[in-house]
Length: 91
Image (tube, rainbow, N blue to C red; front, side, top):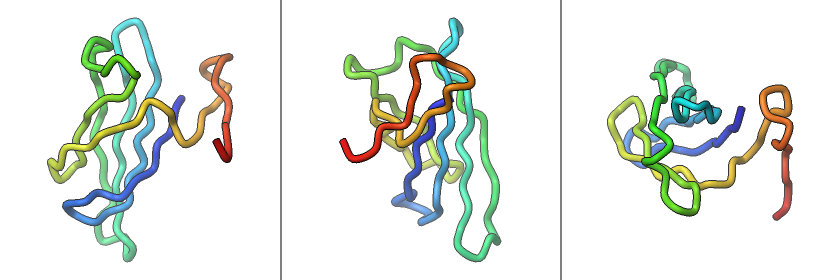
C-alpha cells in the first residue's frame, strides 16, 4: 500500500490517499477530514493503470470534487503488500 497526504485546495480538508497497484489498476481510497472532525468521510479510488502519466503520477478527486495531482513518489509505503515498497525520508 502506498500513502500520500495532502490538503485539498478547495475544501481545506486534510487528505489521506491510499492505493496499491493490481493487475486491474490502482485501487484504494481517498479519506478527508477537517480539524474539528465535523467532516470525516471518503470515497473509493479505482483507476486504470493507463491513466497514469509517464512519470507514474496520476489525478484523482477529493470527496468535494476538486481534482488532485498525486505525485509518483508516495509519502510512505507498507511492505506488507509489496516487497519493493519502503519509506524513503529526506530525499
